Image 1 (cartoon, helix red, strand yellow):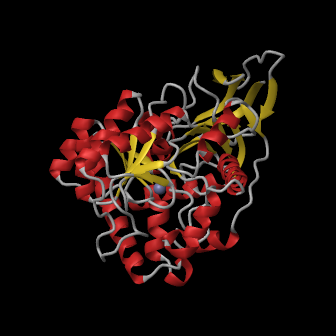
Image 2: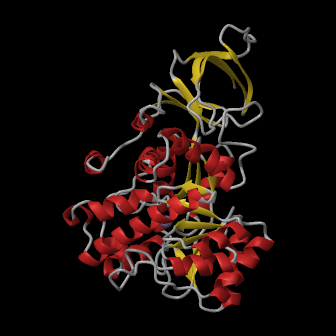
Length: 429
Ligand SMILES: [Zn+2]
């Protein structure tokens, strides 16, 4: 597997509009070996791929995704009898292969849409671990996956009854970290606050569920293993407890005051925005989203807090990352480009900064910036090709011409899209 990508316009992944025009990029197995102007001699054992002036970028990194769901609006995950029945099936011997098949399909869809790395955020019965292992054993050509196994929370916390394991006893919660470690996970996911779908009170989507002692017990055990801890956190009070307890990445986020900004800096934690579910759930008609009044109202609260908090974080040099929260209603596996577009549109950042955040910025947050996130010599060949310059219009990221993951080239990436969902989402652009 040796490739010479010629006539490439290269954007390397830094926060700049600069494009290196007419370049040849040599890929030797997994590694970017050389970046030279076109015309340089190419060793005969390299397969030449002519990009014809198309744009070569680092592969996209999605820091928050659940792999099980399609992204179609659904009432099932809002609780009740149908959710219980579904969960019973998921945990049955019959359910496992069905879940594994869905998880595989969504991971491949993400890859073919240009996402070469996914940090997942809680899936069922270690299906995330199994698909990661298949990819790492080269049985499937998939994205690089960092997986947490089941999320961990207290009784009644976000994900209780679905993708989380629960207890109120701090020692038991810590033992769930051991269990995930024994299943060879890559990181730990907890849920400090509730969420939009499980909120009971108007205006309070991020009710604090886990207490400081519980959060601390999980984080300490996780850090003993060298794991980062990500926490679903949708209120300011929740952020305080999460950061004081040792959480490394605050998922979704909320409004920040000076004290929280100081805490973020002291703990060197990052703020991960997921605009992809919040925006359509707040702004599309309830006939589409199938949400009740309470959920619509609370989605707007989450959206406002996320945008306001992330803007403050950016202004204070706190790392802000991007994830889609794929599997939420209206979040498909192939829509990372929308998250990047929303970041530019709603958070007052340039196109270059938005794309930099989804590549090198996200890589830094998960400690992988030495390996991935930019097109530099010695780095892993996780690359995408788009027809026209995405820095002029981020919507062009939807038009992926090629994907390379760990040096494997996918010449004509394809995936099944959901035209109706796309049409609804396009109305928000
Ligand atoms: Zn999530």
